[in-house]
View (cartoon, one colour):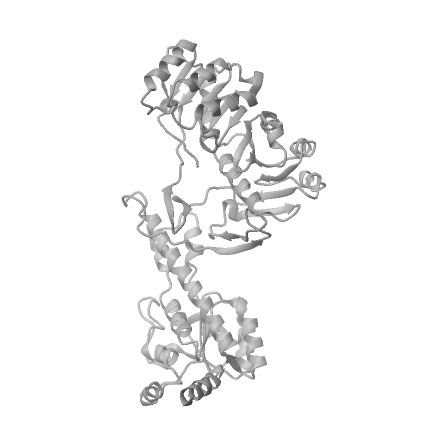
Length: 532
């Protein structure tokens, strides 16, 4: 019972800590006027460095330089200025431990009650175009994380502030508690510190891994995910599941999606938008793709965006209903009119929209209009992850695309130049279709797509069924080899003129013979594009 009483009494003592001395050293000097007013209002003595010291002094804060306080000047171009035992003892000493206080008294050192530090902008530096390694390394903060982690470890008696956005919260805390901080406040600050420093270290680690990409063999030994919640979603894939959208901080791709009209995005919307976006990245010419359940049900290139969308839609109008459309160029008024007169679409994604086009598309309130403000592939995504129960699979991203010179014609009939161009188009679409994937193309527009089918010959049948008469004279791309000749035979019977597939089947010779018997062209690509 006596022990319990002592613990309760200690908690009472450490709950509220009066802030008498603060260490302030910040890279981001925004809102320093607000911080200065808080420090002055509560008569807090301040230790500081460099430009922060200068600004606070001009704002009327009682401030002493760290160099004067410690007796040690900054050295090594500022790399060493706050790494001193007098500062760290003031941060790490525990008022509740008599031996700590005896040591502080013997040294003549004072306790520090508040640490306000933000870090060198390492992330912003490495996101800049053309940044060199030396610049990146010089923006790795050493003293800042050390001070913050020390303060966070000792949240029993110290509050650590990491962002100018928290100055107002600090001010309210001190005002409410007559110049003191509460244990609850300090612990919340500590949690924020360790989240920040963990992410900061991970960014450095991943940058160095990326810098060695192409040098190191195999996959990284460690992959650390550092994700920030961007938005709470209504639910996950199904209404009984929770869901949220997280950002990797790249600021491009899906991380730069902006809703310009319609309802908020759902979990399934985002998955389809991301799938459409990735296929759109494969093309430079005007291109449109419609997705359902992360599978394309129509894709086309055209002389303009309006034609590309019309041709994509005509591939499979039934499946396109309620789909997500991705367009790889600005949406003008004529394209918007075609979209507006079309079937119901859940989402429309494009890099930008002309004002008149946006005004027209907003007329349908249930349709989500999404701009991708930074239309490029994230730079630091050398691998993709798949969740397993108890772990993850990781693989390098499939960025491979075939060129004309990569193709090997293995049949007696040689494809025309136009058929070759159509095959290359079809392969790109097949690459983004769930396996088993079969894509039929006329010119540069799909006429039949079958994805996620467990039998390849059945996938051929389904693509032909969707294409109907349009299959005659079409070309076919398969994401993987034909294990039997029946797939090529069925394609030929449906009117397909040319087939593209990777080699590798034990029955490749029989597949080639089937193509020759049918009088169609067979081209081996050399690459498989499974997508599960």
